[in-house]
Amino acid sequence: SFTYTFRCATVLVLSLLFLNPLFASELSSSAGEFYHLRQATVYITMDQGSCSGVVVASVHVLTAAHCDGPNLAVDGAQAVVVKKNVEADLMLLYVAPEALASRTPLTVALQRPELDEAVYMAGYPLSIGEVVTEGRMQRLTHKDANPHIMLVSAPGIFGSSGGPVVVRENGEYKIIGIVSAIAMASYDGFFSSPVVHLMLVVNTETINKFLE
Image 1 (cartoon, rainbow, N blue to C red):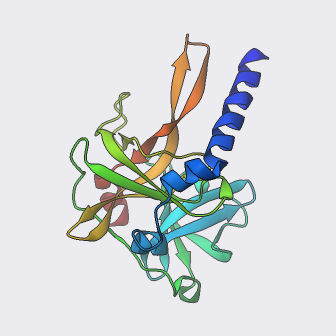
Image 2: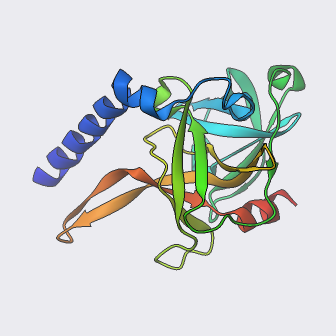
């Protein structure tokens, strides 16, 4: 159908754009600048695809609940679900300490950032390798009144789900969100298309409550 063809074409164009070396070089900064953020961000795989995640303790990784699936692994090491909140789209994983020995955990901020504050998002989009993107807080609440979701402008694509969204506080990176989904734009009420530069993220309060 036309709708299906349009969606496939849109995904293909967005994927090619994200894979373009010039575009990627604009998104991804030097390893030195974002070293600690990169050290905390992990690659998650399962039978049906891949996601991103962030180390929050020596044996724990935080990611999106929809990233669960058979043969779940973090950086190639077996992962076990500790707890999951499907409504909030959050999941905590246990990973053997030796598998995360080279990783540096990040802590969660106490409150949401200000509107239009600079944010950074890390992840493994399209399984092409780790990418850090920069953006701004666009909306502190979801337009459909979802109490768990806020909107950021940092670019992302499939595979970014579960990755951390952070701010800098006194020279340290603090988690303020976890990527849940790509924002979708509707056209004439018939079909929708992903908006690659807008991401729906689980908000700070929901994350802190989940990790209690």
